[in-house]
Figure (cartoon, helix red, strand yellow):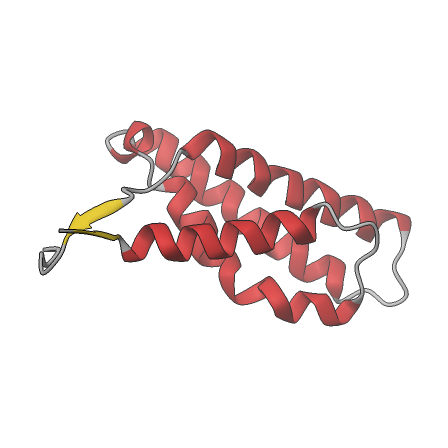
Amino acid sequence: NLQLSPEYIIYTMFASNYIGIAFARTLHYQFYCWYFCSLPMLHWMATMSPQSANNLARMSIHLATSTAAIFGIEYAFNIFPATEKSSMVLQLSHLLLLTKIFAAGLPSIAVEAGEKKEN
């Protein structure tokens, strides 16, 4: 008996919402509350791919770019009215995370019913 894994469910919900935000024609400041809490989880899930898990240098680069992207998004939404610079920072930060999401691959989709994941 198989069930969807919690990681897959969260990833699917957060990534779907994020892609909608990233490709929106206009972003209002209120939209930030729709996805700001999912940004650290999306960056973490995109960073913890099997390719980077065993490579300290790659992991450090992912951590630095994730931190820069999260701060870039925070910066862009704290500028009112939006400027050319803040809009560019927002678009580049969104592009960075979008690239990481597509490059990372999906988490495991199914787990056995009743199976407990050990940490």
